[in-house]
Amino acid sequence: MKKAIILFVLLLLNIAAYAQNANAVAVYRTNGQVEYFVFSARPKITYQGDCLVMEANSKIVQYSLIGLKRIAFETIEVESDVLGDMDGDKKITATDLVIIITTIASGSYSEVADVNKDGIVNIADVVMVSNIILNEKGTEL
Image (tube, rainbow, N blue to C red):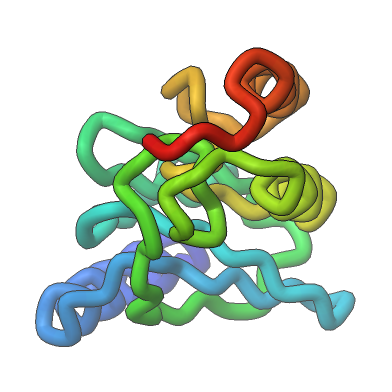
C-alpha cells in the first residue's frame, strides 16, 4: 500500500513538473537537509525498489527513499552550457572548482558539474576541472 501511494504521488509530481517546465528536483530529508538535483531538461521521476529514480537527457540519478520526507520540482536556470563552468562566466576557474566541490559535499547533482558525463558528480570531475585550470589558466571558452 505504501508503495502504491508513493507511485501515485510521483505520478502527480511528474504531471506538475511538466506543467511548470521544472528542471530541478529538491529532495527534503527527515533530518532537515535539502538536496538539489539540477538537469538541463525536465526530469522524469520513477520509483524502483527503495530508490527514487530521476532521469533527463540520458542522465540517471538514483536516490534512496530512506529518510525522504518530500520532493518538490523547481525551475533553476542553468547558467552555462559549458561543462564545468558553474558560475556562467564562460571561463573555467577556481571559482567553478569550489562550486563543484560544494555540489559534491551537499550530495546534489548538476549536469554542468558532471564534466565527464558519467551521471554523478565526484572527484573525477574535480580532477578534470583542475586539469583544465592548470592547462588553460581560465582561458575564454
